Length: 463
Image 1 (spheres, rainbow, N blue to C red):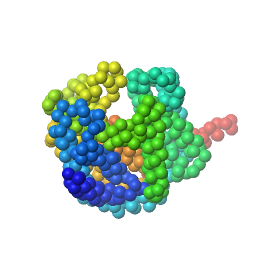
Image 2: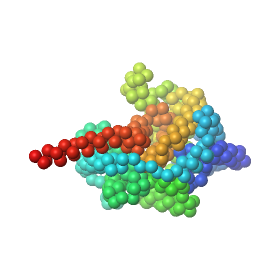
Image 3: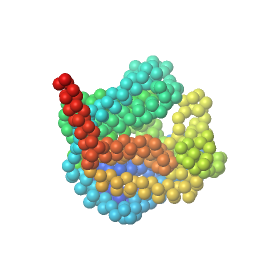
Image 4: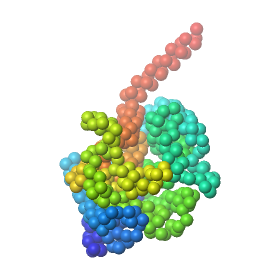
């Protein structure tokens, strides 16, 4: 068994290196980032289980433990080989020489368009979003980040997280889009402009948006969103500098890991950080694998396949189905295996590798199609980004998509079909790119109208 695991690991690493152009951790891109996330959260855990390290608590709930665990490991091993292999195939179809083009991208200089005009528009939007964040916090009643440090001993984080999740300011869409989604995006873009321009005004705006974003990323007492938020800044710096040394990346990884550990202890964790089955190590290595095993254990043995019900209500309506049928497999697995938490109101969802949701909806054929589709999306995103001008917004886009795709990898296959978060991010960045960075036509038009207006005001002031 060990020899088989080593063979699969080596073959997968070779294929991923060709598909990503490089696996240098100091020159991460979307594909190489997926490799590391997949290995850390899926491949290692599945392999350890098959080698006898199978005492993680998630496995104890399986109805057919041996069969489901074995199927899970085999599926993960096959994905480890075929996902990069299919990415290479799509790159060949798209005529993308990833190694050459990504290396050229890293060495390109940053170009900035109508920065003065853009800063004014950007600052106005930022002020509006921060005002809405303040209203959102008033609705919650406190700042969740501070609550983690100054909470009473009997404070129930799980129940409070459920209450906050149902909170909003003015309207749910306003809270979700203009506060929870837009503020972090603005902070990334402002940081990119600061790195490019090195001006005081961009520095001040970046700091303000950074503080607001930290509050946003911890509003439900979660640990990983804050860490992934910091990772984006590291990636932005990598793309600006053309890469950073391994020792620096290792140091930053150590710091980010330390942040996760601190949050664990703040929320009542009493174990040791070196416990392979519990705490941060168990969560990283085994939880995603265990919940993937739930999908193979639950469908269709207990529940029939969902047949596309995990698509968002928007897609269900387009397909002519009742949006009330919407049901994510992660919700159903939590309801079945985590029924106690559902009963006391502290349950969330059980996310896992994208193949799990694909299987829960369409069985084996869903798993096959999901690997093909995800490979296509990864190849397409790299193809598009490497052909854009290297500007502050496009650098931000590559960094943002790198972490978002990594999260989607462990979030659900249907997000790769339709994700409002991804669409909103692309729409925002491309709007900035087209209006202010690509050729500046729209910005020039606005600028000329402003000059005309100023001229008229000056002319009228003479009278």
